[in-house]
Image (cartoon, rainbow over all chains, first blue to last red; front, side, top):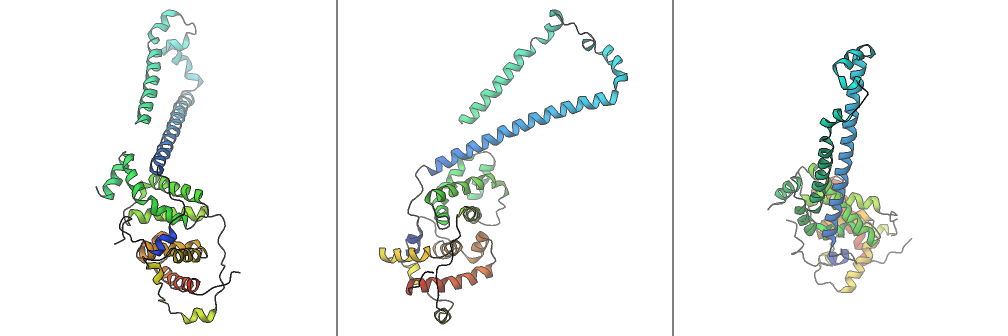
Length: 121
Length: 184
């Protein structure tokens, strides 16, 4: 059985191979900090990649729809989707969409708060 | 808590459990790395890099060897990569003397627990004249007292190769300690 560090005899070889400069006392703490920093960097990179992948997927879906239905089918679409065919935007047509803006702001704020909480733990 | 249980806890998200491995193996890993790289700052950095790499690759640890063996293998490879200049052979050995030594030449000084500071310094100087892989082999075999199979895993060599190298290394170190060899 390999002797544990605590019960190994201080043989001449052990003394001769002991580095002249020992590891600093905060080595464990500093290493764990580096590990956590790299973990967070990896997480941020993965989130960015996910956002790019989602954007590409949505763009790809729209491109596919456009290719599938083609310019010939756009008039029936404009009939069935009135907002697209009506370029004029007034206050009444915007009212149903207004609550979405504070919801998005709250969502981003919550995500930011959650990330900070996880980092601080 | 066993090492396996700690590893499972770390993989489940309890990063703080990795501190146990750091406390247990940091000094020994540092000793292994310091015997390979020349600079003290590099030795500390490579030791830290080894633990970080071990953490990142922890999910690939299959448990077919001890965690320390796996960790040492990572540290050994990183240290060899970082070692700036390969130590060139600096020892001229009398062939007749080499042939006259038996394969199992004894090295009592290695195991001596009451060696004087002068003896330790003489041993340190002899070790400095060895190659990094030779120092590693010596340390793992005679200081850490690891079996040849584990040493082979750490150094990426076969068991037979390890035993052959140990034979030659014992003779070489015996000559360095007991006979003055002129440097090139």
